[in-house]
Image (cartoon, rainbow, N blue to C red; front, side):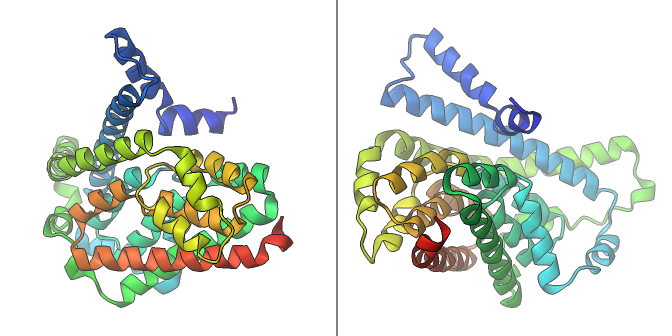
Length: 333
């Protein structure tokens, strides 16, 4: 196993935790290979994993934030404007291989730290949709042309989506506790190390208390869907080569919960059963970017109008990319 693979699987993906949870459930007599046991394992593993990520990321971001009072932060962020800021955020998303639910704690932290809303949404779209590890996997299954075009179009959706949200000035549709979390004016020279750690801890606990119920709801939905919807049914729905395949793929993909590494094997199987390339990739994008559990969690951070705009932008982008890939299928494969 390469170092990157180890980091991806064991450090960021915490697969060791999944094995530990499974072993613990087996030790008390629960069969984790059946639907009920698998659902419980999935639920416990993801709740613990996302909680750990949430706490660590919010703590670290808040600690760093303690060195940057609002005025200083505005001066630094002022160096980047317009589409370049969105592009930087989207590119940052490619090096953070998280699923959509795990990306939301980062989104909350970035927004609380004062980053422009459009920039944070560019990150939120890009992070689960494209990353360096998925680029390698896509190359091994679909070839270099498909992988490169997929990543470029994913970044394009992220940049355009964030730019639209920024231009529409949707900040008033972010929940107040997110905006106020980073508004405390802290003068860096007057803070001791203990003060900074205390500030980071308070920010972490405050965000955690507000978000955790939605983590439970979101992962609970994901556990049920992940273990109780038959793969054969999904294959049947998406396998037909028809003009509505991309629309069906997007609709079916939204309620599912997985990162891009979990959807690539399904996409490979669908393609092998006759699904069109664009239909398969639209399914992947919908699963990784618009999963129902992540939308439930995101609703805690933003108000319905902003959530609806985010869903609309992503859905339109995914559908357009799907039909584009279908049109280029014979050139790319």
